[in-house]
Image 1 (cartoon, rainbow, N blue to C red):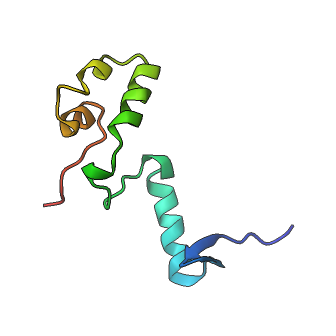
Image 2 (image 1 turned 45 degrees about the vertical axis):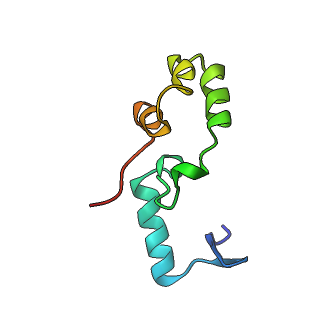
Length: 87
């Protein structure tokens, strides 16, 4: 059976994860699925209200009609996508 390797990004390169990096990668993978992890570096200014509205219309959400009248933060909170700063 061939040996398994796990790769991580380091700058512009993909390298084989070893030692502490491999341990951390395994720990992260076992805790929270990748698509459920938040991005602590995202800012409200980085979210496209146009794309958000298109999505809400596509999934027939009642929030689609609120996107022009309510603050973006409130819409994202109702979608369970907004988490405030760590305190």
